[in-house]
Image (cartoon, rainbow, N blue to C red; front, side, top):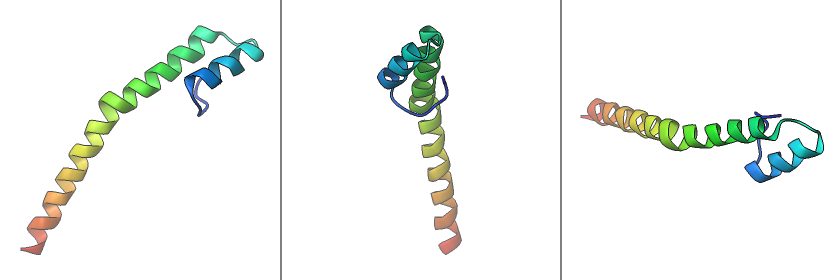
Length: 60
């Protein structure tokens, strides 16, 4: 339940309706959001810039 895609509010309502620990589900979703924003996004930008630089060197 805690790793299912969807918004935090929707997953919280679903967790309450199926009697799952709401704090665990919300914590996992918050971790996923923060991980994507602060770690994955800069890594993807760095890799894209690195790959773009290699393509420009190959065209010279």
